[in-house]
Length: 513
Ligand SMILES: [Fe+2]
Ligand SMILES: [Fe+2]
Image 1 (cartoon, rainbow, N blue to C red):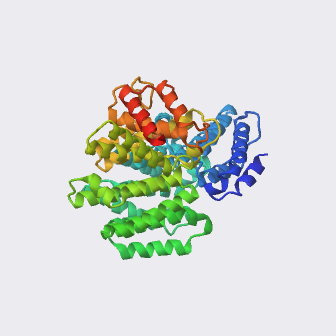
Image 2: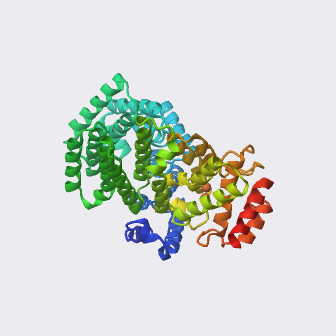
Image 3: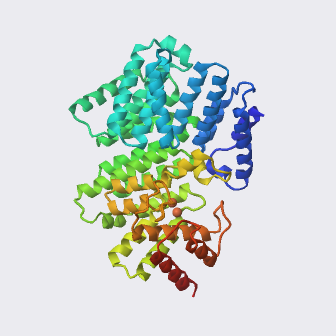
């Protein structure tokens, strides 16, 4: 049955192929396969790597993570520690291509510590350091710590004998070295660099380029070239960057092209941003986003979002904008952010955001708030779920029962949304988004805090209300406005203050008459 699961997966190219009727069957097959991998007395699952890759390639990388963790357990149980470490390493890599939660981050750090202590694990250490650094660099934006880890990994690799490495780890030494150097370069690229860092970056690029002509996988080669193009793009050397990009696209195989396309357009967007052409830049960003969304390429989506925010935020600083909100609005950022949710959240995407904004704005005016506060509440409501953006497609749209990891992934969206808005300099909006699942009785998440302001409560109640009455929400049967209101009033969705409940009541009445 294991082989047939891989055959079954090969029918799918993108999330769109799974969505709808196929979703039920897909879910069932995945659960069945997971159960099989969890068995201790089975045969080896030789096709697991291909299965993991296939799942990752259409937006289910967290499922690949879970399968590899289970496989690591299997080998540990059989006393094959080497193989167990290997599978843990892959598990971490798949999580990094999806969304590494706080728990996964701690786990990742833990593996590094064990291996620093136990010398016989040494060949694996660079790969685990690379996984952990990737979390800090891509998801936490802690570039300094990430860079230190990448440096540790690279210098360790130089101590390991290539042949011995391949024997133990089962992967090409050069492949690993290149992977880590590319990540290091990527992190250096987005770091505020001092003179030392600048030298380091140039040195790393030289090494990467020198190794470019050696035998290696196409994927690693393309990664190096993409990095080269990105460096040129960020430096404003557009012709150079364009030339490299053109070469990549015209030589890429079909298999690699699906990864290359969105990165290609993301770098194009950077080129136009450098030139100050915001319009063209956004056109390419949206294209990059649609392509990565189409393929379920979560990491590329995250990078596209990171660059979009970077472009807008630096445009605002360059032009010394006083009112950032106005600037972003006039330059289409909010429309862009809402449209990207449509790509990710197939249950509650863009329409939900617009509805929540309408309800929240309505309640704020019923409560006679100032125009400025009404504006703040309706904009923030529009963006309240923007943090869902970093969540892999399958985790967001899953129709089966959620396990604790699924919940942890989903529950990261308020903090992630807050982080995005803070980078845009929208402090107050960020705070509301961070707390939109908190409740005044402490029954909310992620922190269970009780001290939340009325602006946040209005966004929260509008969110809950609209989610309850939306017909296509998979986990629930839609409620009528009256039923939804009663549930909220009776505290079934956590406690809300009386003023907010009254506001909602009047809003519903004004809507239904
Ligand atoms: Fe939310
Ligand atoms: Fe929501």
